[in-house]
Every structure is written in C-alpha cells, then in structure tokens.
Length: 143
Image (cartoon, rainbow, N blue to C red; front, side, top):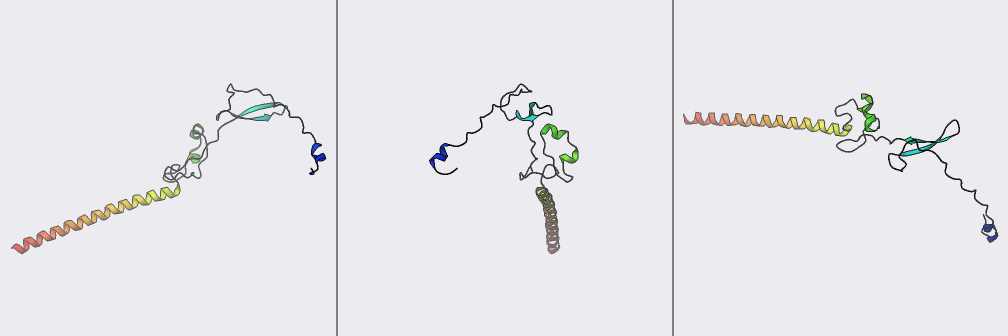
C-alpha cells in the first residue's frame, strides 16, 4: 500500500474469522495441563478429532557431570522399563549411569589409589627393614 491517505482508507477487508472447531474431549480432563496436551487430527472420513499427546521422554544424564548419555533411548520411566537392555544401557562399565569421561576418571582414580596403597606398603617395609638393621647394628656394637 502507498502512503497516500486515500489508499490507506480503502484497504481490503480481512476474511471474517471462523469459529474454533467444536470437538469432543475423549477423556474427562478438560484443563490445559502439562499431562493433557492434545492436537487436532482430521480422520479419513473428514471428522476433526482430538488426539492426546504423551509427554516426551528425556535422555538420562550422567550422575557426575550432568551430560546427556549417548546411545540411550529417551523415554518416560514406565516405557523405559519395557525397553530392551541394549536400548537402556551402554555396554561398558557404568554404562547407562556415567558418561565416558567420568567413567575414565573413576577407573583412573581407582587405579591411582591402589598404586598409592602399594607405594605406602613398600615404604613401610623399607622402614621396618631399616629399623631391624639399626637394632642389629646396636646389638653388634655393644658386644
């Protein structure tokens, strides 16, 4: 449309608004809640019906860092119980519970803790041997 006043006055009228389609709720809950989402669907016979939309499932998160776990099907808790084991977990230690990086860190930390225990044990053995030698020398020196 141009900027002249006569053109502004003669705008084409908008099409009259149509009423919202009257559809029957299949279930008794008529409130717009999170669990009562629905969408219109036209049947092959031409009727307009409401279909209830289920909530979307979320992907499980890593228990340590909170990242989404790859290779696990997102699903609602009840549906997750009925999934195959291959869809619920990953074939790895802590699979389905921790991500790959956190699993690596846990294994590494456990290994280092064990190494530290071994080093501690070796140091104790050396100290005991040194004490025994010191006692043996004191006894030998007195005679």
